Image 1 (cartoon, chains in turn green, red, purple):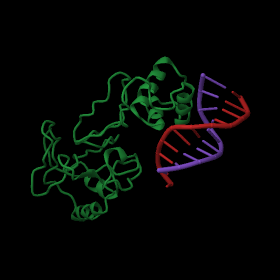
Image 2 (tube, rainbow, N blue to C red):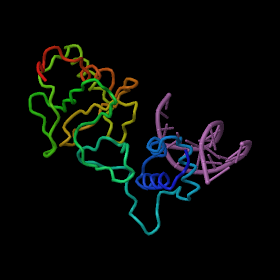
Image 3 (cartoon, rainbow, N blue to C red):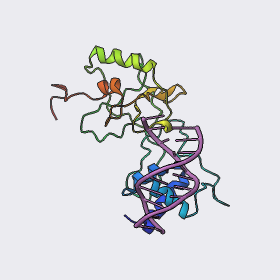
Image 4 (cartoon, chains in turn green, blue, orange):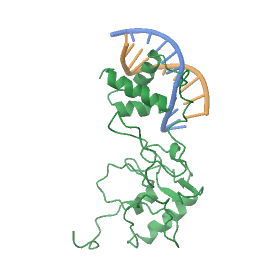
Length: 199
DNA sequence: CCCTGATTCGC
DNA sequence: GCGAATCAGG
């Protein structure tokens, strides 16, 4: 891979946005973070501050709600809409994943108005052990913020996104999965037997 | 250990 | 110019 104008442009844009070198490298593909850093320096924009330009935009975002996919995969064009919904995982998983139930047990989840929440798993069949495990593990959640999540941290949302009482599990995720052991247990269920009979 | 950017230096 | 290796740090 070489530094085509287009790739350089993407690099510049992402760097300006506060994306890390490794993130940029992933986006571009075919290069390592070292390459990105090297290029950044050669371009002379090592310092993220730009004279007479934007007022240093904080890294990525400071969402009041939630802005999931920190990885705008394609399109070097559009700015990543920081508006998405409580959906989180970016799992290349074919497994049916019943959107994480965001908080609340005795109440219908309070969704930040607007975005339709994906199909609720509702009263599905999750082993009591799994549920117990989840309750247990959530007490030890690292309570990470959106920006603290990495590919190795559990991205299971805990709490109500509409309030301050919201964070992500953050415990070590199962390799290849977006969640920790406990949350994988409730997130990934086998093709339900007869639920959903038709269609 | 995970991650960050910075620097060096052979290519 | 490029980027792996290395350094320095959180």
